[in-house]
Length: 75
Image (cartoon, rainbow, N blue to C red; front, side):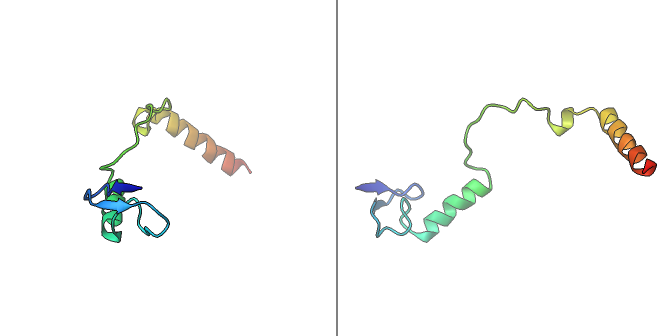
């Protein structure tokens, strides 16, 4: 089977001897990896239902830390 390299579109034979399949070379493979690492490529997902750190109430955090501190010094 012949496929196109996802990075440069060069034809690549898809078989066990194709070391970098589906890429044509190590260079194209690393370019793609860099694009994933820099978040140029993403996999779509549903938004998280958990609150983000920005949505957490600072007073809740302070109360939790105060309780932990009190518990620590009681022992």
